[in-house]
Length: 395
Image 1: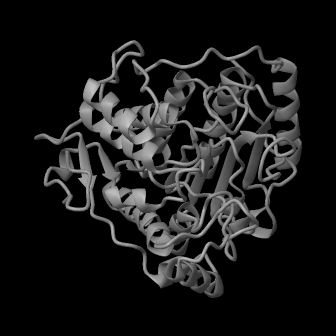
Image 2: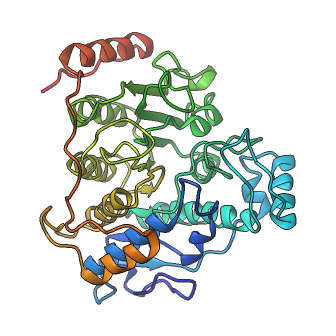
């Protein structure tokens, strides 16, 4: 399965449904064995996807790689020159230095590792714009980094840089973020831009890092009314996420008519996640993937970039992102009770040091949630008041 540095794009591109951007060197984005963020679970997602859709003729997936690190001008299209220089120096010296207030340590080679992930997002954006089919960058989605600093395990903000590439080409971009943590780096980075519609579902910032993303934060200047935040309380799950998504996202996308959609597909809202307290199930992620894919075909000519994001349990990240790839490629997905390949389970154990899940759908049962119609109505009313926008009734 060609997912390493020697990968070449498939020649069956015109018949494929999905461009998958992957280079095994993405795993070099590694803060060490005791840090919660790791690209190993994203690599396992790619391996699992490859068991469902191996290269063939005609190929449902074009495997795109290798990916070289982004050049400094690309990084500096969003980040300040002084910060890029700082990261480069830390990477060269190897001295133990935090790149932010204490969550994001530098490490030897961190500059190239982070810049390669940026290049993957830009390549995915270029592919989906040029070819009108989805592109998937599971290693990306590092949405917290700001122009002048790292934040929340994110050194360079690959999604913000990809969004900026499209904006400079005078394209309207809809950015949708389902990570449990608010995508502050992207929202504030384009807070003044009317070319970026930002819709963000996340755990309430009063209960989780980074403490931002409230309904009153709707943009400024040309961006006023184009930043849409839907904070959810701890314990909220599918019963909160899906009705809100159905009411808000199609309405806004059909009104905005983006020329490209970027979906940051964080998996830390999963019921099994270790850091957040939301309770999404695999079924909710799958519905969102199908909905966004259908909307991309309807409003943006199929131009859709999907990245990874947060997620701190390999058993949930690997399977949710693999299924996202299956859906984006238009492949009949495996049923929830289908056993996972034994070779993949062995690789999982070797990489993670934990027993792999046995089936595609195995997960914890969500706890009781206090979310109900009253909370939904209150949040929708707040959004309507802040945005001057009406949303359809819940079905």
